[in-house]
Amino acid sequence: MKIDPDNKSDLSAQIAKAIRDAIVSGDMIVDQRLPSEAELADQFAVSRSTVREALKRLAAQSLIRTQRGAFGGAFVNRLSYEEAYGDQITTATLLLSMNGISFDVACEARYALERACTPLSAERRTADILASMRAEIHRQAQPGLSDESFCASDVAFHRALVDGAGNPVLSYQLAGAVEAMQPLMNMITFTARSREAIVGFHIRIADALEVRAPDAAQEALHELEAYTLHLGRDVMATRDKAERNKDSASA
Amino acid sequence: MKIDPDNKSDLSAQIAKAIRDAIVSGDMIVDQRLPSEAELADQFAVSRSTVREALKRLAAQSLIRTQRGAFGGAFVNRLSYEEAYGDQITTATLLLSMNGISFDVACEARYALERACTPLSAERRTADILASMRAEIHRQAQPGLSDESFCASDVAFHRALVDGAGNPVLSYQLAGAVEAMQPLMNMITFTARSREAIVGFHIRIADALEVRAPDAAQEALHELEAYTLHLGRDVMATRDKAERNKDSASA
DNA sequence: TACATTTAAATGTCTGACATTTTAAATGCA
DNA sequence: TGCATTTAAAATGTCAGACATTTAAATGTA
Image 1 (cartoon, rainbow over the protein chains, first blue to last red):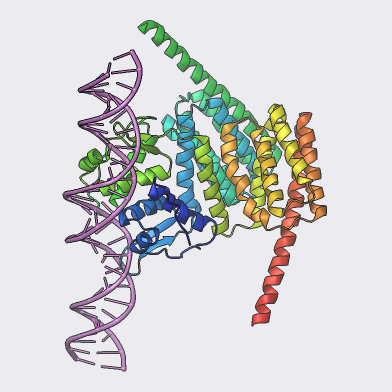
Image 2: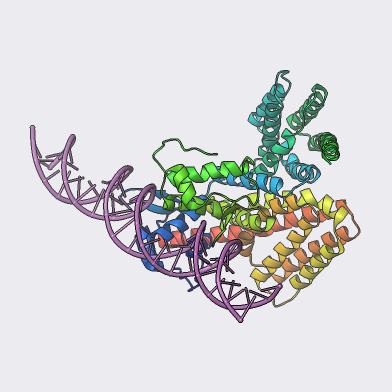
């Protein structure tokens, strides 16, 4: 089913690729059992350790799961949204933090994606979704809330907006974009006034969804984007200024 | 920097998680060198094999890279868009194929996401992007083209539309959604007439982008979505019918 | 200085062993 | 026979030690 050219480097990566290809192409189907580690070692003419390293690579991508014991082994895993979310969010977060993505760019992407599902959400939002949004709005209005908790609630609100579209593919794709913003948002110190403004936008969005008014929701979202961008730019400007002062002081 | 509770199961997964957390939290920064395998084995009080399996998990997620030789080792990897694309597309493809996502749902998600970046693309598209789109349109009009090549070109066209927005975060998020559709699209047999229709929509989109008319682009995209949905439903209906006939014949 | 050689440190691979988990089969007993 | 218990086998998880290979720094030499 899979052969290995006599390249000399990174056997475990090659073996992982061969098995991964078999899974992605549909040659191996969900819940099918892979040969045992010993058998794979024979087939590929490598040691068991090398096979194990290959299998761990696949396990890290949730492509297989392993069971111990007799009649155990490695099985092709049905990739679930729940499993995929985690990686998606981790990857998106790292992409932002490691590549110096500016607040502006991240913000634009996030709201563009949210606008993509607002019309659908206005059409399909369930009572549950609406209740979740109202609950988050209520939490965001609590006076003693820390900035981190406020941001977390903000993310939860927007997740509800996305999930309201009732399209799991959309939810999956947007989970990363929305959650990856949180570290950037966490750098913002929310004054009482800015919180009040944000909650106001949230209420407008929830109201619009409640009466299934896509245009009103879209407009509120647009204004929220502009406001968020404004807040973010203020913070960045202040930070850059402090940075410059520190530099000139130390020089 | 990281400790390991005395759970007895899946040491390599626990170690991978500890290191991953250190990377995601920023405790370890890009290009920082991890301790050698032997040192990690000491720190975690496990064997070198176990450490290696943990490192392979992280390598599979592109979180680290390894270099052989003196002064080599494992280094925190700067996660690039190029690396992330691959996983993103693989995961999105598997999610669709393994979870029985219907053509309708996938199609809706894809076009919703594309609509999110059409206004940006109309505003910012470069001459290069426009040239790419025209080139793909030209290819799609070739008579001898196979269905697979037509689909691949279709994906390339829509990738250009997305990239036109000039926002790498958007491009990353949408790569999976667009490319994951290809296997589903490949099941469609494109007649000469349907190809002609699709090329017509593509021309309208490119024209709209050329004169920076977001609304016209949006409208053409909407109609293309409806048309694609129509094509897909026909195919699915035909296939289901054939399936039923086969069932009743064998029964 | 420039080039060749040596050396050390690290990952990559192999072998063989033992521990643990889990299920199926075998066994024993009423 | 029927059921509970025990046993055996198969598989993954872990460990220890060895050797191969790669790489860059250190060293030696013309």
